[in-house]
Amino acid sequence: MPDLKIISLNCGSSSIKFSLFRFSDAGKNAVSPLNMDRVLSCRIEEIGTGFGSFYLKDENKTESEKKNFSNHEEALNYIFSNGGPLKNLLKKNKAGGGNGLPDIVVHRYVHGGKYYIKPLTVTGRDLKKLSELNYLAPLHNPVNLNGLKIMSSMFPLSRQVCIFDTAFHGVIPAYAAFYPLPVEYHEKFDIKKYGFHGISYAFITGLLKILDKKIKKTIICHLGNGASVCAVKNGKSIDTSMGYTPLEGLMMGTRCGNIDPEVPFILKNKLNLTDDAINEILNKKSGLLGISKKTYDFKELLKQKDAHSKLALKMYAYRIIKFIGQYAAALNGTDALVFTGGIGENSDWLRKEVCGSLSYLGIKIDEEKNAAAAKYFQSYEPLGMLDAEKSAKMISLDKDAGVKAFVIHTDEELQMAFESVLQLRLNL
Image (cartoon, rainbow, N blue to C red; front, side, top):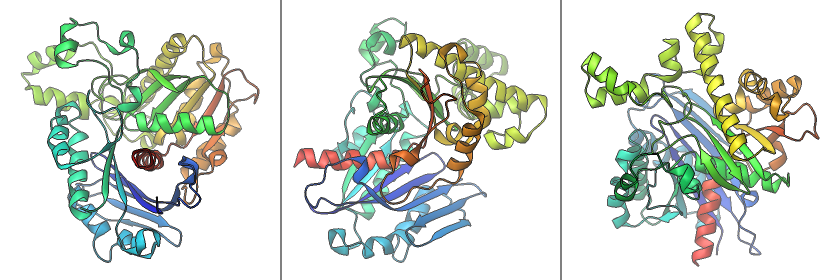
């Protein structure tokens, strides 16, 4: 297998994150996250708003500017057009003959439904099947599909691969995955817990193995605008807080998470709302935004002194604490607690708030290490090969503690590149 160029593309509802990786197969290197060389990292945020931003970093330079894009297609065309920032770098790269074409474009795909529990090399007939899953994650799957179509058009000779967020949770046992509804709804319509953030959880689990921490039972908190908790035993998911859709579970930036299921029906009747309006409230107007009445931005809320903002933050932390307790019980104890994601990595306040209620598990954090980890990850930008030691910081007060607390920088784009190359080698 020759040297490869891999683009990892992660299209969110209003953002794009991607990285360019180089994998050298000289001497038949093992396919491992440690052998993926990141040569470029890029983020585009607030697409479709007047507050857009563009950030790009490669081996030679860093670009950061306020730049607005009306949609994902416009943003992707800007990046990959002739003379665009990535096109030039691809041409300079000797892998693949320096022809400006990636060998693999790998896509984060949020909901694979019952069909997709392994990486998918996409063919034309897969597009229709993928489009039929849009209703399962309406904020994400349509955007993921659009990104796949755009990149397939731009790079028709490149291998297009989808990695599914739900795949990591495909092994959750039925007693944890099924809802206590009439069982025929599962049998006829596949109504069950699918779970999300699986690419992130797979990376964290693999990194702990690389670090040889001998951890068998882990509770991982992936905390960002979307947030979830996962219980992992011997490297496999046994339960997770998100469900059939990403709405279930924790309170999030704009999503309500777990509430009494009768409440939406009551609101619909009292306010004479349509189903779409109720869906808008639950997914886009609730969570931190709904309680604070100000913003879903966690950093901004920490600056506020009013009662609603303080309540929003307290609720957010409290619900994380409750899920950690549930999963400690489900695992019959835990060896490690991991914080990751934008909030999980960057907020020492949240980690202190959560861990302060977990002393019964033997979790005590070092406040200096906790604050230092936040400062470190706020400016962390991995280029080159993965340095596992630099990606993880232990914040436990006692380094020999029975339950260790970690802050780990998750790397979904790296995990996707790794899985796509592994699939390619296995299929050869």
